[in-house]
Length: 68
Image (cartoon, rainbow, N blue to C red; front, side, top):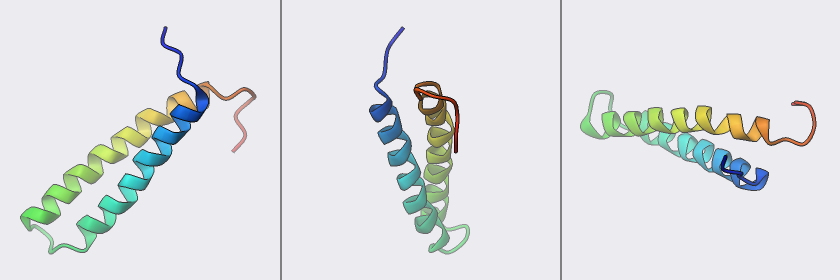
């Protein structure tokens, strides 16, 4: 099994979340239904999926119990 250092998993999660925040504003500042709005919205949706997928390694690689 591939071992990912916790810092790499955390960095990937933070990067995906930051990208999501930027894409959120890119979508919300475009006119609804415009091609730019749709493209930014689709990219935002993909970034949300990346955030959801990247949280598992962050939680599983923590040395101790989950403590938000």
